[in-house]
Image (cartoon, rainbow, N blue to C red; front, side, top):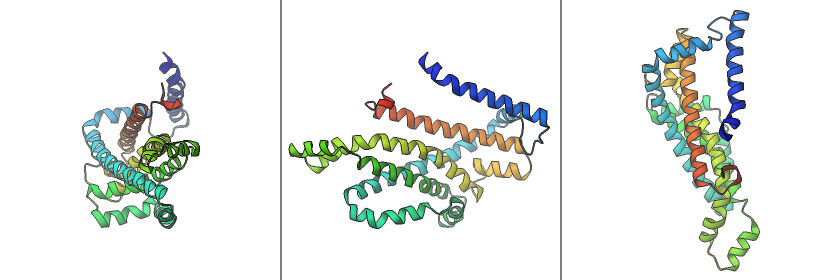
Length: 254
């Protein structure tokens, strides 16, 4: 019952937005190429499911690979920077500058490096988008450990590895999962944007782009709906993992 009360406002807002969307098209006579009706999008979502869902799964695997690679590299990089601050001072500006490059500019370069049709180029784009949020949040978490706890551990002659494992890592986990939730959404965006610059014919981004070019905007919006659902699924998986791993945190205790 408590879960129903928590989700009720979001469901009410969702239904209201869809109803306003459908009504605005009928009242203002908005053309389909500008904004299709939600009912038409749902219909295309169902009739084209045999094409859209395999394409969505293909793109989802690219996003998942980039998410895993970028997040893992971000955690490793943050760990090195937190342990060796002189190294972080030298490398951190380079990492920030690399992530400041617009993804639209990086996508063609990644295609040239790994192959435009290869899924590895899309994984690279997704990994770049995931890297910086995970790095910054993990670093913030590792550096947020309570100094009194660290001094207490040292008074018991605890090694630096033990302090890292018992104090710094538990402190950093809520920060890490916050970053992973952001990265899960960015990974799907990176994979689809990368496919706009070339990809397999059965990739979701390629299908959305080709449908838009032939003015089949209803099917293109149905593809966007598939991408949104897959992004929500990845986000939900991160949230579920957070509740299992960080059960002691106030936000995930229930």
